[in-house]
Structure formats: C-alpha cells, structure tokens
Length: 449
Image (cartoon, rainbow, N blue to C red):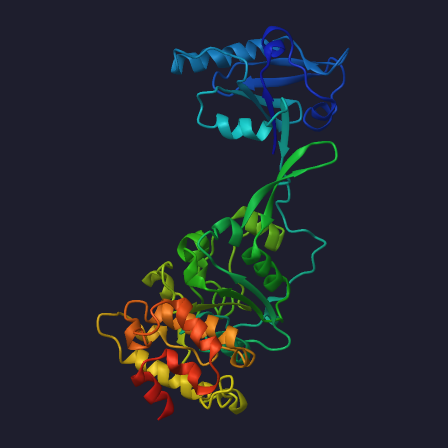
C-alpha cells in the first residue's frame, strides 16, 4: 500500500500541483516526462489521464484540475457550505502501476486533524507499508510440529506480598533450558504495548513508512513457534495492576487451550484461532495464516491479593487461567533466614512475622480482606533484617500506612506515637528490644511470649 498526502497551497489551486523528486521516484514509479497515468476521484468517480511534467520541477498536468473539481463538487453536494481552500489535503492512493485514486480531505472531515498532524510542517508525506508478503518466506526452515513440546497452560500465582510467588514460578515451572520473558502490567499498559503497534519509520530520503512493531506477546509467540522443542514462558507480573481484558483484546480468545491433541494441534495449543495479519506476518511470515498460541508457550502471571486501587479480573478472564494460591508458610523457608534475628533484638523474623500475621488475621472487624494484608515470609530480605532504616521503611511503614491505616491503635502505641515520623524515629533511635516500644503492650507481650 502506498499513500501520498499533499496539503493544498495557493499554487496548487491556481496553477499546477508540484511534488518532490522523492515522490516521483517512490510513488509515481520514476515516471518519465509526459508519461500518463489513470486517476479517478474516490467520491465522484470522475476519471482521466493525468500526465507527469518534468520540464522544471516535477508536477501534474492539467487534467488533475478536472478530477479535483469533480471531487469538490461531490463534497459540496454533501456539505453545501464547502469550498476548496488552502490547507485541504489531497490523498492519493496507489492502486497499481499508472493507476491511482484521489480523494479530498476537507478541514471539516474528522480525519483531517490526524492526517494534518502526520504531514506536520511539510506539504508532502509519502506513506507506504510492506504488506506484500502473502505467503511464507521460503528461506524460513520448515517447522516439524511432531517435535513440538505440549501441555502449556495459563496460570495465575496469587497470594500476599512476599509469599514466594516468583520463587515458586522459578522452582516449579522454569528450568535451565526455558526461554523466559518478564513483563509488568500497570495502569497505563495497553494492547499496543503488549501485542504491538504500527509505528512510523523515516529513511534517509525523508520517506515515511508505517510498519508493525511487535510487542512482547507477539515476539514471544514468534520465538515459541519457531523453536518447537523449547519451553517458552511469558511471565506477567502484577497482572491485576493493568486492565488485563483490554490489554489482551482479541488475544483473549487464544487463551482457551486444547485439553488433548486435535486437528493437528497439540495439547496446550489454542483451541480457537484469530485472524490478525500483523501478528501472523511476524510469527509465520504469512499474513493470511490464522494465529494460535503454540503448545510450548506458557503464560504465567503473578498477582498480589492485597493490592488496592487495581483492576478486577472478571470471571471470564480468570476461567481461562489456573489459579494457584501460594501459601504464606515458613515450612519450606531456609532455616538461617527464618531464624535470623531482627537487627540486635531477640526476636527472629519468623516469630515477628507469625505474631504480626496472627494479629492481622484476628482483626477483621469492620475491615474486609485483612488476611490479604499479612506479611509474606519473603516480605524482607536478609539485608533488610540488618538495617534499621530498611526494616523501618519497608515493614513498619507498611503496617502503619496500609495494614492498620484505619485502626493504628491495634498495633501501635498511639498514645506516645501518633505519626509515622514519630514511630520511625523511635524505632531507629533505640537499640535491642526497646526498638519494639513503638508497639502497644498486647503486641509486645505476643512477641515476647
């Protein structure tokens, strides 16, 4: 597809329409002087032979005026107030060698602003896209589907922050030969970021072309398809922090996976296909091929159940994923980590975490989903347990700002410390078990029990 946009100026209306050498070369196929092409109006259907004149600067012959006039008259029938004017855009479309269509885009047209912004400060803009690859590239190696791994799934690992979701993902689903790509959803993440978008590219001659730039989903789909014997995993962290149904778009249909081999597709491949020429061209080198998720491509997402102000995953979306709760337990945690004491106190991380979580779990009155606010067993690192500042700003702040935001007296000594600043200052200033004087008597009794 080739399109030439030309903003009308006074000379174009009163005299001849000139264009640049680049337009002659790339849009008018290096036409010679006096060469004729057939051009017809998009609305009027008026057709004529338009000559290329090269005696001075490249320009179009007089017949173009009749076609423009016919198009303007047709627009005027629809919009009686319309008059051809400086700033209107001529949109030329290349149909075949020496065969073109012409359309006027008046300044009242809802497409005008977009096209005018594309042209920017110049009078000319040539757009062409490389969409001629209708069949698979013969240089690509043939894919032996019989060797493709199968059984891929969609999985969401969910639990409280620090419960070990990422650890479980690596331990249970990845191995040294897996190809893994991580992305993170967030409120501004879009379908274009995930799947891909058409982006402008400018060559050294100033010619603008628009080509599809694949996103991580399309790129991973290509890798998995072309490497059938390798397990591929697309990891989506914080899946509920973005509008997942909108981000997936029509890809949503691909999430239904085959439970057994069927119609030449292995268990774990998409049960249904979609038609998307941009994706198909990237993945298969064939824009006419139907798109499916391969049986060796896993989609594994993580989700913190305690997150607030995030998007809700609807039932239809969740149904296409296996939901796996990651238990918040110290059973499989390394002994040296769980028994490590917090700073120079006598309280181990396991004792602190378990005690605080029991208080959180039993303090549900008037507060919904408090259990989701529990501290994960991996909420802190070993280094955090050795730094007053790190522990205060990560753990103490979380308890004050998030967990007990509406009932701080349940956890803290709010008689003596009624601001976060006071709590943190006291914790950092003291040494040993005195650091826990920021908590109320009931909490301290539980910690030392």
